[in-house]
Image (tube, rainbow, N blue to C red):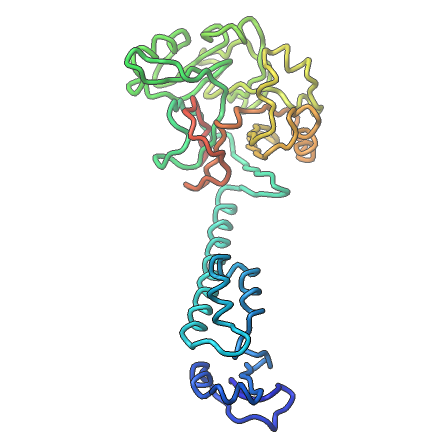
Length: 354
């Protein structure tokens, strides 16, 4: 019910009551306004005429944009009232905004529930049963609508040139992944076959690396084999069927045996400081035979200030490795880039989850 009175408390001044909002507005005249009458809703709040302050409130509530403030200020002018279509338009915008927010919350909740994915303290955490995790050779721009439920993984050498002028990338350190050999250009295959390709599976070890950065070293690598997932230092990952290796990916160690890794332990593997700048980073950890993908944006220029370890230690991982970051970073969940950097860099390999 909408009531026309001088004040909510002064019921004797009431000159009309209407169940329909527009009818109350149409009955209200400029003479009523001059005499101090207002329209109140059932809660006793003034709904007409609305003043300039209301336009400011609408701006602060993100109902209108800054560019619209002058227009709505004129609508809510001090010595007059606004037209019915203006009010209806404002209420419709507000209603639509609330609906969009509710749909977004429902949509996000569905993603969180479906994929054991959550965000807490600006940290993205995805729990992946290891049998639902795979690694794919990609060598394409990171942003795509062709697949969903993926994130960038290993480091690589980029901007390599084919004879036809197109670019390609090559993996570094250890990588065992699915590969569609028919999609790879012959010139690139020459490099990859320094490792081994068999039955659409690529084994690429340190000795096959085109550069010398990791050769004759042992590098922290997540391996999935007959015993499930684990992280250890490897010079090579065996393709012998008796070990049952299905996937492997190298990364820089951050936590080892439950303790923060110091810089000397990282450097001895061949990693350099360029991978630890302040940007978005992804990590892989293992707990209870389950793989965890963790992503967050760091604020310090070197992870060994303790920032990453401080964020990760509460999850009680025994071992954690850091993945490629910065312009390579992307995390897609159910076809939505829930965390991503601007550059659409050509990346070498990706992690996939169901």
